Image 1: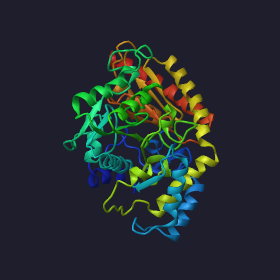
Image 2: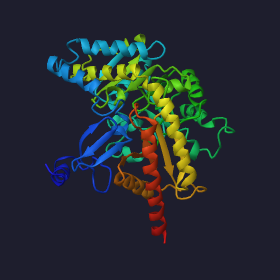
Image 3: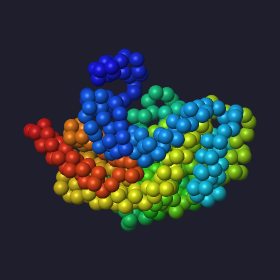
Image 4: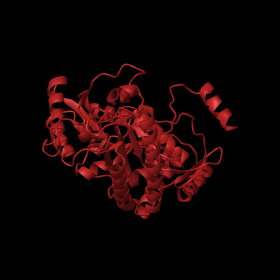
Length: 436
């Protein structure tokens, strides 16, 4: 099909609620490692990786070769029939997860993983109420939308019951009007206030992304999760770490983002980068919690042998090539370059993130911090013209999110920096002209 045919048929045959980037959608054709090409042959440096999903590079042959071999051997089994691929993956997960977490329920997505985690917490504790965070994102099912703390992603259905939201640790836009560290991380105490005032005081769980993904890579202070963890335990709840975007070495040095805050959760959920682009989800926990999930359980595609092989191959590659270390080293360099960009361009109000999960927040005025969503969209368009793909997020649509493959080099960062520098200059010029 031509580019025009693809776009026309996309509009005709797919739900109109499926959003796409850019005023003129980019139609993908093929990709290799850190690069992606559209159907017209234009080449792009991919610094978004399919929404934090390409961990080890597009079509990495060390992963796809094992996937292809598995397709020829056994493509499907369902959870009714054990197979070597899913057992090997589950064993690997047991070896790398923190604490006593050693049993997994493999599913198809982050939404399913989070749904399973909340069900599990409710069954294990015998309680129902769950605390989530504002600005968080948990998926697209009814329960996951109820957990989500952004109105734009909650509009299709009334939310599921039993969910309450605490304020999030958004230091750049502190909801309490305070400044870190003199604030004493007061936002963490709101979790207790919410439990005391909007629940029965007996919660099933607290769920949070260590770094809020769609929220705009909002990164909590180092003390935050230790304080929250104690509060959750004081009220009898389980701590669920949503690692859909922060897992698999993305934050650097550690397998899971929550480990950066020195907290061991009761349940970990994961997806996205786990299988380098193959659809998979996982809910991981301690044996005594897993044992409470009784009654018949089945997942037709959960633990599919092909996706299980892809996941284990991805995790093995990350481990063998020490990509967690690379995420820390190159991520630190990337952060340095983004801060250079911030000093040069007033549109950038904040730089945040960890490892190879970095973001810049665009504002029209540094003092008022007025969000700049139109400028953010313009900046993305300019980056595309210059050959760089980046993502967007934040409650106000004014945060640029970047999550390149974990095996990029500093040279890739330099290339991205040069493009962003030019794109930011063009965006600023356009914004000034429009203001006149």
